[in-house]
Length: 202
Image (cartoon, rainbow, N blue to C red; front, top):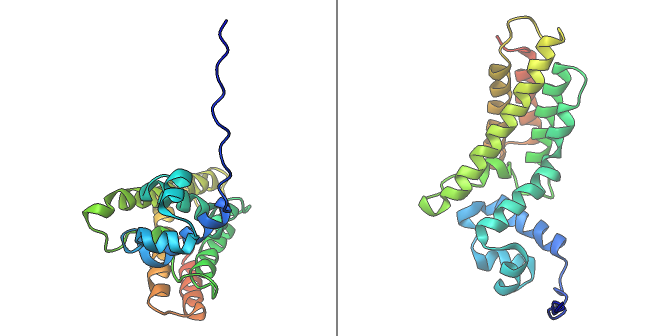
């Protein structure tokens, strides 16, 4: 039986892929998908285009990986909020997390999931569709959590879980846009507090 030949041993990348992805995420977060050129990305990542393609794929692939990193890092407050024991605590943690993430002094303002494809043209359609699906996924997660809250008696009978989920997501998206426009953390926290005073929304 003929033995399969082993290919050449690959050379080490010579850069920290995790650190490079973190930097790419920040470029996309600050400049959006279309606003971030390959030169911007590779310069921030400290690698060549060839290395970027080899490690992460094309720009769309890189953006997808950057969004996953964002979800696991700055946007991890969503998963933590969903684990809270009551619906009101879920809503509070979700909106407070949005305020905190959108106004961090060491990060770009706003939310990558909202800002990433604003003002994108036809070439930005893949990113726009990806982010729309990402946001809709967040609404679905909230809806399922609030559906459970209704079944458990934690929310009043007849409460529409989807309506409640969209209510929160609309505020969170608005917080992102306002943060990008220069609204302060204090201003946005007051917005979140006002939204929570109408809980559960009628």
